Length: 168
Image (cartoon, rainbow, N blue to C red):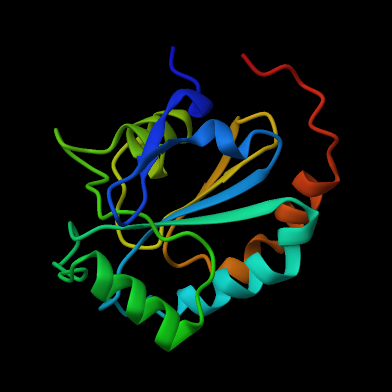
């Protein structure tokens, strides 16, 4: 069984790094899109990043073009859009697929660990959010209709946990 910290992701420039870099942090991971009705959630994710970052929260964005082709741009365009329109400073990664045969291993892992409505693995839309505790365990999944601010109580509880559970 793969552990989250064994997975690698890519920065927009294509440089790969292991999620082990976030060992001991609480992660809020979302698939994102720049031309979606939910795109204003970027601002709310950034507010969470600023509010809780010093306490150990890391927000990670993963652009995806699988839902209505709402993320058509290239890496530079996506980065500029996020920074100019929403002041995003949290990491936005290389564009990925979250469903299907080409789904990125991170999202395959997240969807397998926390299934959606009726036990489905597939991601239903942009801005699906996963919370991961300090030990790398996927603790919850939230659809696009869940506003990032709605996660504050859960984030605070995860940040308050000491993260003492063993990590492989």
